[in-house]
Length: 308
Image 1 (cartoon, one colour):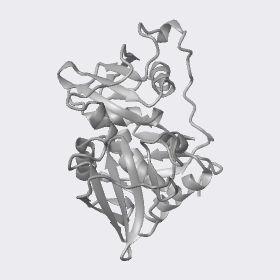
Image 2 (cartoon, one colour):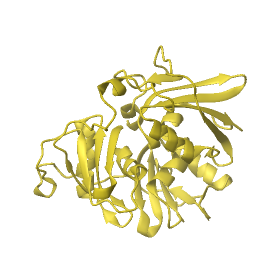
Image 3 (cartoon, helix red, strand yellow):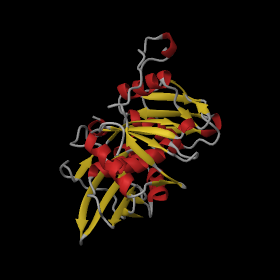
């Protein structure tokens, strides 16, 4: 029983002190498409907005029947009295949000904490759109984040002014970059056009103890937290549910391996057994609900579709 009517927004309480937004996203993503997360770290609470009430209800029911743990704590969940998470927007022409550079797909982030990592930067950036590249300058405590569109970058910029985005104890300072794309040393246009290429880009994931269907949407939500996905397919081979996830960069695949190997997609079920694939490239002939090539424009499944 909850005191509020069913809502697309869940109010999550009893979060551990070391919790991050990525942890919240990781336990919530298997239940549906997450539209927004409002993380109140000082109160150890969060609001998670799903696309539908049914998705929110699924997580709530699971939380009440099968304990969802984060660290040493059991999460407490209930429907929020709000039907959506609203972050007050401010126009880009507002003097408080004025920037020196013209609009760009790339944001320049400053004032990062010393303990910051690339995954922290991706975590705070992913809710605003598809992150294509991150150039992390750890010694300078700065980063450049490239989105798929100028609108996505602008959304993060405006949001950072309306509601400060924090990593650790620091509030991020964001502005448009003078560049229209991020170039990672050693990854030229040829490398960007061939995301399979070198060994280590592709993960073969076998899911055991399956209680909930393995869908492309869930795969994208979970593994997309670790980096931009070029291609993904889900299939069943010899009675085993599996997925191939092809990243643009091997370091993103390595991050997904270290973070999710041996973990459950849902509490107590859908366990992930991850290994590197020997395939040079994932073959996708047609974009559909079981396979998608994200490198070829507007496929059936895109980041924009998931966020809609």
